[in-house]
Amino acid sequence: MNLHIEGRVAVVTGGSSGIGFETLRLLLAEGAKVAFCGRNADKLSGAETILRQDFPAEQMLAYRCDVLDPLQVADFAHAVEQRFGATDMLINNAGQGFVSRFDETPPDAWLNETKLKLFGVINPLEAFLPMLERSDIASVTCVNSLLALQPEEHMIATSAARAALLNMTLTLSKELIHKGIRVNSILLGMVESGQWRRRFAERSDTSQSWEQWTGAIAVRRGIPMKRLGKPQEPAQALLFLASPLASFTTGAALDVSGGFNRHL
Ligand code: NDP
Image 1 (cartoon, helix red, strand yellow):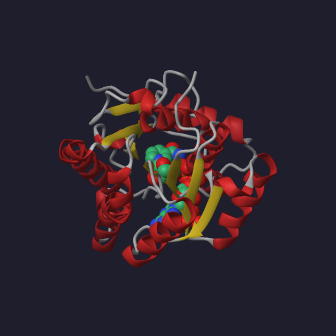
Image 2 (cartoon, helix red, strand yellow; image 1 turned 90 degrees about the vertical axis):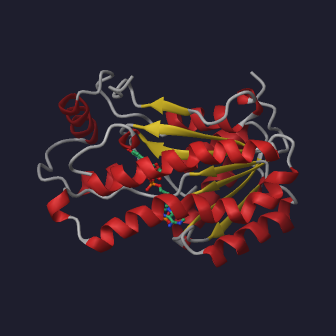
Image 3 (cartoon, protein in one colour; image 1 turned 30 degrees about the vertical axis):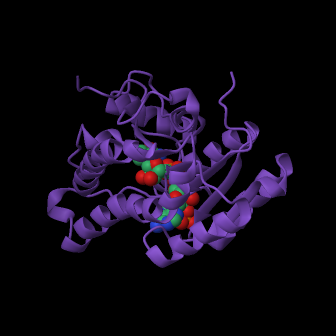
């Protein structure tokens, strides 16, 4: 199937690992040019080195940037414009979750979560908007979580911030379609990637393998598919929504949770 993105430019925030990294692989395999960012320079250059084994260096730009710093994001956008001259697809993926119940959540964690979830999208959108406005296939696609609709007690601040992001992206979809820009999201359940690897490293029962540990979590949490998602699975959904294959879809939130969703 042709995604119609060959030679087009995709920007992926948080592309140095996990879902973002797999999204880059799929984009590059479709012939797109990619620009990606992350905060950690070593992780970023490690990801670039791996990608260069399979794809031409001219097709990619890795840039160190914290999406919460508007000046760094503006520099990133400038670098993309200098290098590729365009941005057709903005994929807002950078971020992480925060595990805490209400009585464990300090005021600054509420603020940090809200800032990450909202400004992690607002800053890149503001910086890349002029280029998106010039594209004839422009899209903004956000990685969000099922927590936005199905909050969990042990991630109260993340759930609330995710709901705010879902609300904001729906409104953005109405406003930006007048500039020809589609805005969509994916809603994740649990996906094997960086944040789960970090929690696995800190597990109490170290006799459990990765498969046993993740499989047990999936069963305990009631995921009908009895496993966590693979990073390629949300990446595939991101590619569909970001590409012209989804040309009549805006304001959508696509569930990628292995059936974990319980809302109508
Ligand atoms: P990873 O930790 O593997 O990837 C996160 C990526 O984002 C890394 O490249 C990281 O690089 C980058 N990043 C984080 N914060 C910033 C920042 N402030 N500025 C720029 N880059 C940043 O995790 P996942 O692939 O799992 O996560 C991808 C997205 O999916 C996140 O937004 C996460 O919250 C969301 N999500 C994931 C779920 C899961 O089960 N995996 C569930 C629900 C949502 P660096 O640290 O170097 O900055």
